[in-house]
Length: 139
Length: 198
Image 1 (cartoon, rainbow over the protein chains, first blue to last red):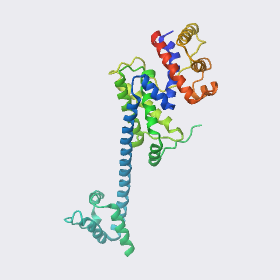
Image 2 (image 1 turned 45 degrees about the vertical axis):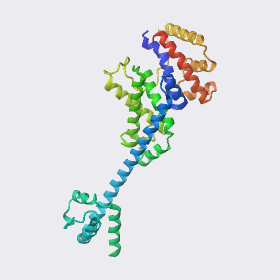
Image 3 (image 1 turned 60 degrees about the horizontal axis):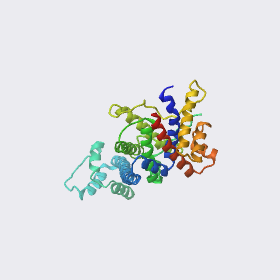
Image 4 (image 1 turned 90 degrees about the horizontal axis):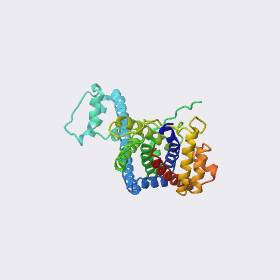
């Protein structure tokens, strides 16, 4: 009989220990202490990781939200350009005035999505959508 | 019958993170990772090395589940989200071992997550296993094993019980009593294992 086969007795109890560690944080703390590792230091490190993950999670959610808003703005702009390219261009230009007064453009209907996206980077997309909706109300 | 997968949405994954008892989960995941490396895969290394690797792996696990969402939580398969996280970490440990096998001294083959085979006393090796078992029992007695430790030992070896809840039900222990007794029994068994050079 090989050592590996004999070892099965001990392995069976290793699995019991592993299950305890999954289920019980006191068992986890005690195991770490037995291994010569300070459980308080591990817990402290964990809090830092938890904060980092929470921050990254929030940033990812914001990114996803921004991407969703940009897609909505792009779609609305496309519709408005099809309805009235000149007036839509004016609305967009008004919003850009504050940040980029030198920007002038025409023929919005001929712009590619990339060109529109580049301009939208300099605009508050929520404000733009509200302005476009207001224009619709006026008509 | 196979259950239809039910992949959690980004919102559900975020809610899961907010609802976790993070401090407790972190301790359980780090200790479980170190124990898996040491016990299941027989990884050798200093405690500092193993702890550093455990940190990396647990962080990779939570990042893949909660931030990049590369590992999708199938709620139908894992009604308990912690089971999912522990399975993700197990697969990351296996992948890590495969990629670093040459760097670290791994003394046994990498085995996938599995239920340990039950110890069998009816094979040709019965007498030898029986002798080994006798030896383990003698040593446990010499170390002054307590009743609850012995009850767990018997439930595992003679009754073939593997699940903590089954063992606890069988011998009527609270969860805390059970986990404490398993830990004490484990310390003793590790000493015996080292003595027997297994």
